[in-house]
Image (tube, rainbow, N blue to C red; front, side, top):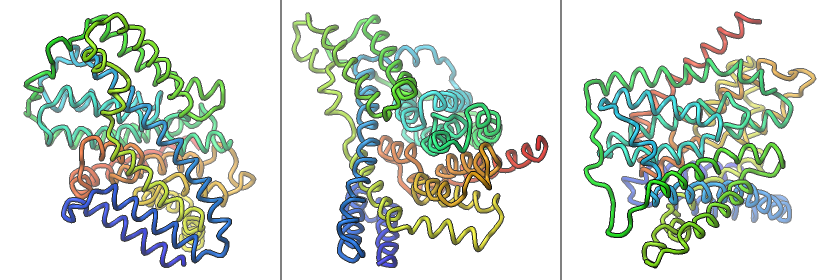
Length: 428
């Protein structure tokens, strides 16, 4: 059974990667792979009842991510409908692509530490559509946004799900992870920025040649600013909501979305033009979100869940321990593996393998794992939630990303590893 599961997963993964030449949407491949994997697990597994229980558990965890994604994408669409991003785009005056690249990279890096890498990616890619006309330019920027969002999330307890897992589990503390991983994460961003800005030197920013406006659909500056700051405020409030209530982030995003919906209804209730009100409504924003991206998320997360429940990923981690032995190499390989499979089950397996009596809080292993698992997923487009979101929003092809961005991400990843190990040896 385990061999069949691995073969099916590899084939589904290959179909996703070969989406463009096969002319088969990646969402279809992900759903088909997930369906086959769970079918084999249910029929060939030792305990059908356990398979059903595991599926319920996986659906619950997947739904949390999907609800969060839907909420964040809807908020961005509402802000966009009100032309709220003009509050930012009107203040960006640079005409050089390389300068804009550095600005976007650093904004994404620090924003993802406050929000999280998935939300930050959605917001920043939506912003790039307002700043850049050429799709090729936006693809490069999307790649840098993925690298920057994952690097920024790695050094913050609330920026990346794997860092949050280690934080909640007690393996790391807030101040220690910020001090220990900040410089490696910064190196992971700066090296790709240096290389990319060099390749883009001398190129000018080509702004969109038109703004999508329809008669009667123009919002006032007050409406633009109100919805922008409310939308961004809702996203920023999610980590605060989580820390106060200890409820999962999707509940915070849905709560905020409901509040934003209410304000929108109150703001436009006296408008007489029903078509205008419909254009600015949350209902219209829900229609505009990319459902194929969400369906792809569902498929890929459920597919990876079978590898977790059948202990294939745990076996991989144990094999690494027996075969390699050295902690730094093992964690580096776990980071590289997270570019192929979800880093959450990999880190979960590692947390179960290494006890805190041997590896105490804030030890080398846990901090280094937070960095590697958080940033290694940038090497392939479907190696992180941020990458999957970017893939759906900008229609990025798997092999384009692997060819143009993957090597940059790998160079940044290993640069951060060098910085972390050098820093650790210097101060310990």
